[in-house]
Amino acid sequence: MLVDFGQTVVCSVSDLFELQDQPAEVLEKPIASFRCRVKRFSPSKKNVNKGIRLLDENNYNVCLTLKCARDLYWAKVTLSDTDFVLYYKKPRVRKEVDEKKSVKQGKNINSASQGYSDSLELEQRKEELHEEEERLHEQEEMLRKEEENFTNESIKREQELQLVALQMQLWDISAKLDVIASNNSNLVKAVCIIQVCKEFSGEKIL
Image (cartoon, rainbow, N blue to C red; front, top):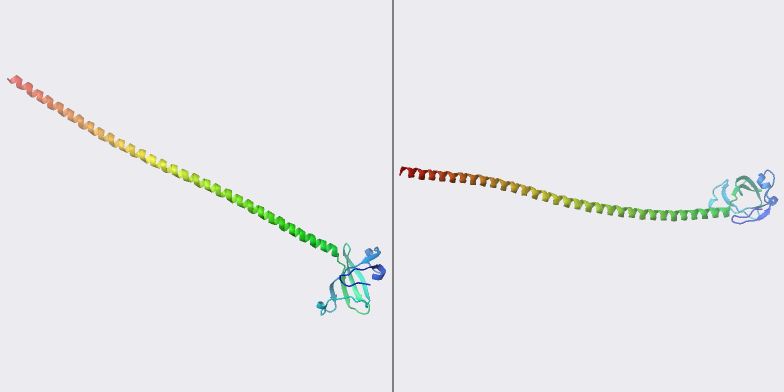
């Protein structure tokens, strides 16, 4: 006995499949419950879009061929009067749903975490850029003050050089005036001596 896709039935092991040549795990189970979905079918693929339905009026042979994981088996289902073979897998529906839900929640958490991380990184980057802007502004202000001080120092030194040059010119003029004054004084003295000599000579003649 086997139910259609999407349905579940609890039955005895002997009713579901023959015990001969079955896996040991099957023999240990007192009951079996299957929720089946079709993985593939043979021999023809022309009925792919039509789907496969197990009918109540048909008899089927079920043989579990392989244990894939915990509570998960591959089964071969055949019609009793034909060679048409259906391959069924007993999925862990609840677990698959939980796993998908967990994966989705994990993705949401990762997305939220990634979004928060990106936001935090963006804020940190903005703060770094703001600090860099302030540092550049301070550096620009410092360079401006240094340039202003350098300009003032240059003007001051130029004025000092001009003052020294002017003082040297004044000293030169003063020296020339001293020479001229000294020459004039000597000339006056010479004239006076000559005059005195003339007067003295005239008195003697008389």
